[in-house]
Image (cartoon, rainbow, N blue to C red; front, side, top):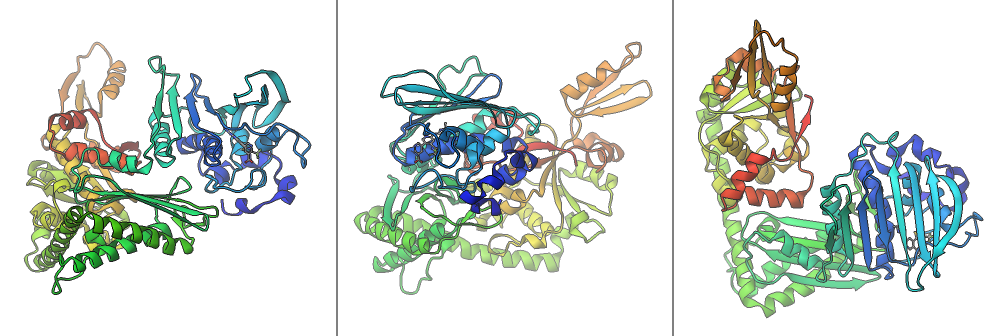
Length: 639
Ligand code: 1YM
């Protein structure tokens, strides 16, 4: 997408045709799958958000219509309707049909648009079956419709009158099914981002309504007067805070505005989310670096002065002061430079100093004025530091035991190949299933690790404790990556890590414990798509001479329809992996040509964190129910 951002007015002619966008949609919206489909909504919503950031818009509404078209409405000034001096056609039509450079039309201020700089409207138009734009302005209702990839049906015209105080823009578009792989919108995907936009823009009201759902008559409205402070409260809602109130700082310099909200909780996980102009900077950048540098420095300096850290004590490091920290950093920048492959990192170097100084000033003052809270926060960081040192020792022991006792490699039935790209490891529940898997496997590329004991719930344990769990130590050694500070994904010995558990509640429980372990301590393995769940069959159907395994009830019904009714089938429901003979287990669940694997993905970190909390927290009933009802984070792939 990089070059597209730098065109300016003289290029209008060249880029004028929306045909270019239709030819290479990926260049403009990344993908034409479900992600690209949703991207269209954000392109339009961004224009409303820009209008809100400029101070003219208080309400934004998103409606999923019955036909999966989308309506976005705002109460801003309305897109200008007069003829545009360069194009000679109305500005509305210009904005929707000419792929112009950003900032050309609107002036100054913070623009939401991360990569596209306001070319979004034309992109949406190019990729839609039809688009209708209604502008309420100057006591009149102006209307224009485009069809088949942005062709103007009829120029902008006045179709009615409205009250003087009524201003705003309403846009409805229907994505072109010839462009997109799917045309069905997902309510939750839209809702989560809309809620996030509400947290990030305090005082702005955002509503989402699903008109495909008969029961949804009012929609959900998100409006947070407390902004990102409320976001921290939301993330921490099921956690125990270390101090009562969310801490909040803000400051501005050279038109760069920075806001930080934070609160420590008693978990061991860090949850930092940073944003620049409402865009999630997944890979951090200078705004995050400045804040974190200051956080470590200010805590150490206060702890020394207050004599909580004694002279002989070692200083706390970043990992210590981030344990249990929930933090939102929101930066508004007139000229952000996004770096990295996914443009998820803020590059502007001046922001590092700015965010350091805004955070340091505010946090120093907070600690001085709140000695009780300061003590609780620092006390937690000191415990984290001790645990870190204990974990280091435990790791050393683990390493030694690998070499001398061959503990892990005694349990592990490794594969012959040493080329990680073709190797996979099955983590198998129980010894009997482990035995079948071992006998049935392709020993060239498939390793088997039977899990005997219970895996520790790491949601409630620090690294040092996790390392004292035998099963976890075995897993770490088998993977080869190390853990914590030493983790190195390049040392991973298997491309696929496949969890193979029974299709019952115990099996689900073990699966969730493993996923928690991977999510908390081996997150890159999840993010890079190395974790899978095997799908053992649910039924075996014997019909005359043929035997067939089916995965689920739908497949069962489908298959039963195809059978000759004169021969009675013998149906057995599979109880556990252990009951299958090695050949059947291989054929149904392990054979790369026949099996169905589920890839484990983490679509949204805020949601994932909340779900692990729910799954691994103290309340038992909701957890059991959730596990039974959901295959979490899984999506079907054909291996
Ligand atoms: C549902 C989508 O597009 N709202 C919207 C867009 C614009 C304005 C107001 C606007 C901007 C400016 C001046 C300005 C846009 N205007 C333009 C352009 N909602 C939606 N609301 N007056 C109105 O930036 O100066 C592009 S978007 F270029 F015509 F000014």
